[in-house]
Length: 220
Image (cartoon, rainbow, N blue to C red; front, side, top):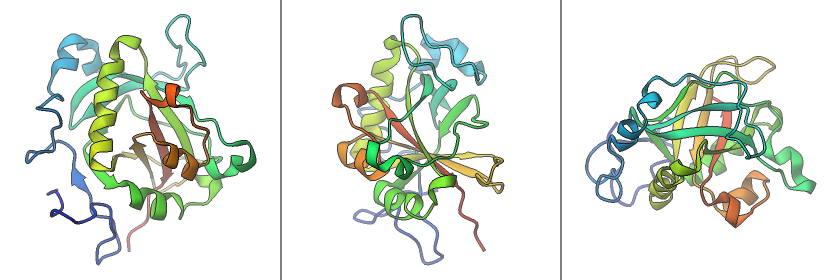
């Protein structure tokens, strides 16, 4: 889809009631920092092209805590780095705000970001409109320290645009959205952590994406 016009909120609801999204890999300045999202990651890590999801989530030796999912982060079909999903620590007094649905469930081997939405839309409409028992917030980090720079580059890409990446997921049992779910990858910030009901640690969150999962809104 085409990018929004200058000055418009890419995530603002359209006249039809659905958010406007922008493609995550097109031209016209969408590629950040002089084309830093080329095929370099795939060239350095050929195995990323054929990655499969891992339910065991065994982290690199000496790291903790264990992950519930491992796979690849991609931008418009181009692998960036190997990543894994970790729990997100809720604020003690607001544990339900972070959502209670048990994610990850059925995440694909590659989280391929091809669309983006405005962060204000994500928080004010998507997150706020989902009940706690069908939404979840998690953390996505690199699987290997050597890939941290690639994830930081992706985080900066989203933060500079004030957007969250969008990945469509399948349905899930337990009332979590039989009609499908949507995963949003958002750049971390103290204000976003507060809105999601999560703790904030600047040293830990620098190379992190917040993963927000909600049922996909049903269109009429």
